[in-house]
Length: 204
Image 1: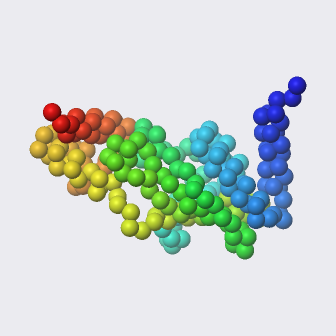
Image 2: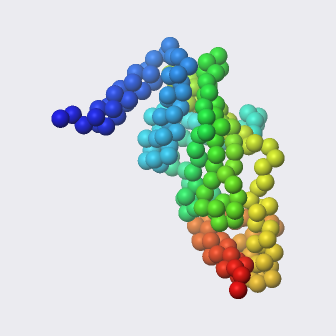
């Protein structure tokens, strides 16, 4: 008997390969490619690379100045990448829409992680736009934050105030000049500090 899940995966992959090699593409096709890219990206196994150009340009807030350039095959590294991995950061699309004229797909996204959960911060809302080249590969991304959202600093205030009275050396090290110093070690220290704060706020 044929495994229907395997057959479904095979058919979906076949369709995507056909779409990626087709210059004449429709509105729903672009959306399908974007959805497949996002699903592959959530797997964090490198499979998302097949949906992008060799160099992916990423802008924040607007497309002015030099973008961040991500080279295909290179893993995202650095202190913030370590922080995101430790706190299991994730991004989920709420809705996607297509602009065939500009060969792009845009969507509303919600981003969160365990750190947000610890400090009581709701998910951050952003709008992302993905532009495709003539080969239907994602070549540019723009990420724009919804205005008026409270930052992590707002939710950290009571924790910082408590820590300055009860563990001043630790909070001064973790939060110098009101800025988070990201790293795996600091993420673990923040987790302990916040849990200590919560324990001491419990009644009785």
